[in-house]
Length: 130
Image (cartoon, rainbow, N blue to C red):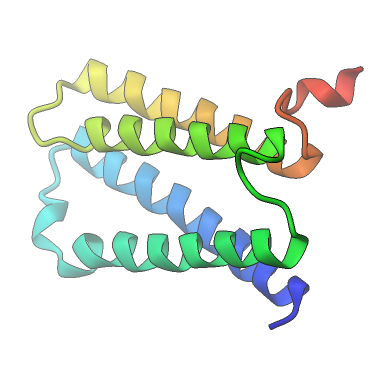
């Protein structure tokens, strides 16, 4: 598979990921029982699988790997933070204020990850200022 195709698959699944997280988070804030809708239960997992496989494919195609290249290490650690924050935000017993805070934190971490991906620098968007 070509680099361009794998990259576009990765970018599209990243966008689907944030849309699904914010959508499910918003539905949770308004007490909509989204967990009863089968597509919203399995689609995030299917998307995340494609996202992870495309990320691994990009690492192989670029010949760059976490723990070797600092920007990829930063992305992996930030992705773990994003997953934990998202899981906490989507818990059924999460209060509204806490859910809003966690979703905002997810968006901040997502923005950081996007900046690292764009700049290949752990300083993320701040690397563009210098």
